[in-house]
Length: 273
Image 1: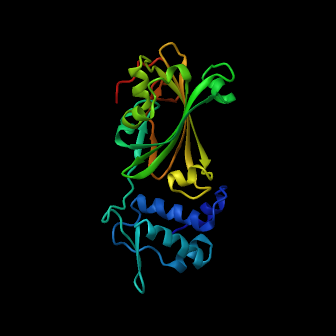
Image 2 (image 1 turned 120 degrees about the vertical axis):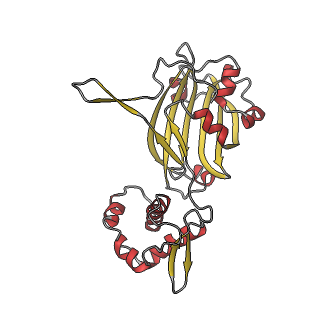
Image 3 (image 1 turned 30 degrees about the horizontal axis):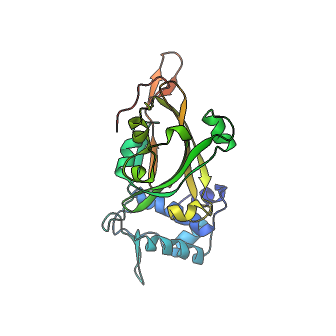
């Protein structure tokens, strides 16, 4: 019933425990609606065979799903999907483009400030923000949550002279991009890269994931109207609660080239989304 799952697990290069890899696969299947509410999952023996692991390993993965209220386990009857009947369906925040929904998504989430301090710019931050080495910048670490469940851990670097109104009080009530624009800094564009990263000992407890769990990593440099960088952001997102959407359009009749409809480098400043 679950063909090729063992192959998929073996191909994972991440140093995760076997039970956690199985948990991730089953959790994604539940989120996709593979097993509607009250639908039984395959038995422990069948799952153990399909995944090529011991029954004890499968049971550990199922225990984790049960703790999150995604499945119900009944002695003698089996394991059943709870689906959305008990609010177990996973809500995700979608970011459609580089700047299109950043502020809008921020307004839908709550924020907790982990730290906020002035430090000499690290080498990479100084380079990307086009600052002299050692220039004082503001470093902030925030955790954004959706319905009390952590979504992302955001580390931001802002040149010191632009961070006057980026106080704890203001950051608790407004997104950083809004505060920058209120300070007269019109946001014009951003360069962003997406990759993957494993949760370390610092971010894992903040996002309520295991150490080594896979995360979506975002690095974004935001520019003002003159093209000068005004913010460097490193974001780590839980992939089960965040998805990245992109609209592509075909350009030209001869060459089949697809281009993204994200905000281009010459885009006008985004609205207060």
